[in-house]
Image (cartoon, chains in turn red, cyan):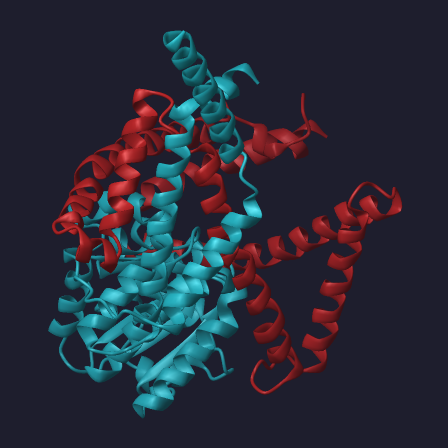
Length: 212
Length: 294
């Protein structure tokens, strides 16, 4: 069992990891054909992964409903919404133009999603009032920088305070870029290190299941 | 006697101030919500119409589209869902109008399944008002699962990645895609992205390997992390949030939804700055001590 559950996946990861790391540097037609073929396989696997994701989601919420866990009512809404969308989608033959499915998309999904995002403005304002305080030097620097960018990024700020737009641009293109670049390099190095660990079987958490 | 009275009054004054400051720091958040509602609605009803300065990163995208010869193939990937519609939808409209005005061939798609219907409606609406024909002047490929894999697959063989377009027509039969076999045949790609997969995915898996020029658009909160990519040339420009869309509309000399929303954004920014200043004032007036004790 260990061979199927552990050794084979680790072996496959090693072979495919090394092959496709090298493939990037080999522009030979055979190498390109291999990439073309595998990229289509990956798309098919991603399609099945979506089915797996939906199944897992339904399973988690089914358990919540069965055990009457806190918030189980929301799980019922999830089931109902999914069922209604599925039935309406199949009934409309997947057509979104002038169909019930299109109506559901435009007037339920789009409206609800936009509402969720727009209430963020209210929470940001409330959170800024409650927590954005000059408690330390670092917090003060952050506060001043945030205020300058907020002023410089809107026409009213540029109209009232001449040059605020340029100050905002400078903050974004110099200190922000420097910090973001540092973060990006750190993430990239971490990504490379993790990939190497996965390819060589040092990192096996992705296999799940706990100890061998 | 007078000194004692003054001391008592001063002590009393500070006690009252401290009490007032700490009360103000615990202000009912519903009042803040009400203020935000008012400053959002008023400018929408009575716009000030202030001029919008165009930033260099937006100008670069506009100039690049302007420089493309007529008939060049442009790929517009609308990688967002309805939750980011207020910021990214106006960008899509402005970019499409520009491309159609320049008589470019536009290929559309999305890496986000929940954004498919919305992306399709942008394409069909703008194409209709610009008098462009589906399949000849533009093609909407829809959604394919896989994120990065879709990009690699398109880079290798577009017809394999999308055997049919969104409307079920074989991609190989579309007149617009006759000359487009892979991403190498695309002159310019713009990803309007609200997260992953999106702009990052396009430059890592697409631009680096297949060598097309890449531009991007994103929500305002994610804009700061894309600035390093402009300097390195990984993207040639960036439309950041509603402001980016409004700048593009200004360049096109069109009155779109982004410009309409900028006054409301101006007012809310100023309200938030005012609230931050007020809360810090109360914090230093005494609320700080109360908070530390509490």
